[in-house]
Image (tube, rainbow, N blue to C red; front, side, top):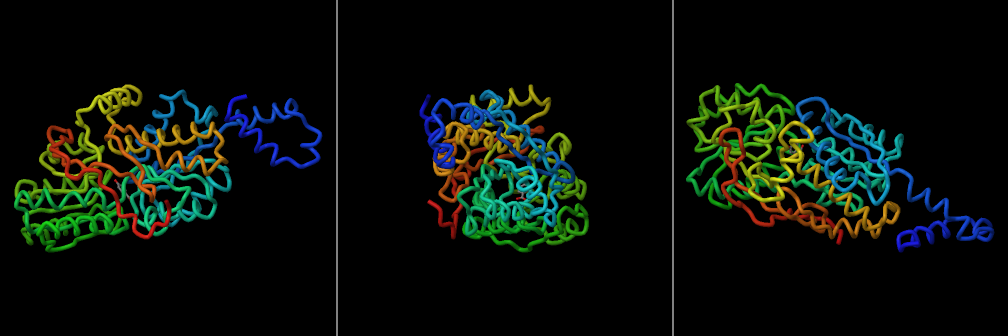
Length: 401
Ligand code: PHB
């Protein structure tokens, strides 16, 4: 019996009633041990499979599956049973949908989600139930700040991380007055927080903050306002199908060659083919770039394209790293997901060899990672340089670690 099996055996012994333990021998217990280790681990995806973020959900799921498949398709030696819920990026159904996975399906692990508002619903369920939860995208701040939790790990970013790297390169290019525009919900508000901090610190002035409700794409009136304001630059947060429409409308309104467009890098992720030349020259900061010239990234991109017949983006990378984190965590406890102390310790100290570059977990369970400055060139997010090295979110108010 190896060390993991011995630990499991001891736990089973302790959990059995005295009478059964008294009557049993190690030999009698063995089939039960084998069953416990051999039983399937249930992993639930709660992701958007419809709506403006649908393609983000698909990329994340692909990435998770790929990372686990590369390591033999099991977690800690256990087969996986997958279940899925479409969260529709609908915050009002967040708690209900998370409970479909946690209470109805009794998942061992919940992977979700993309939209910050929906994440707050998942987070409530995660904190109440204690179920292991991996956040593969949504960057809403409290999840790894004041409401951080031992069982919740984020493999993506906080919404203010990319924009904390945005202000300085804009000012270095003499863009002193900017208009901010985004959807009015947590992700846009948090992104603005990071932009405000970095841009004003570098000496810039935000002349106007514009917004529209998620997931509206009626940009015309706001673009007319931008044209009238004549700022040196526009900075924004949009993502998914809405980001594609925004860049097209920006160019169609004649602004592209007059007022440089900058953004939190999600703006140009997974949409460049759809947007075409209207995206050329758009400048962004993000923790990933297609063209990162490392063997790790190249190998990942080739394998992903071969498997899924599409190009990966930052969402695929985040899904991939979620899979890597689970593989590492469950390997450390030999598949015994009930061994929470050891599992969380392994996940906290994981070093993830990501296509984005190596990263580690902060005490609040959020990646400490480099931010790249990128420009769109011929349908590609080309790296210009590192805009911020090993950038950590403040984790303000988190009492873990
Ligand atoms: C979010 O809602 O937190 C969010 C959504 C899409 C992104 C980034 C953040 O690309």
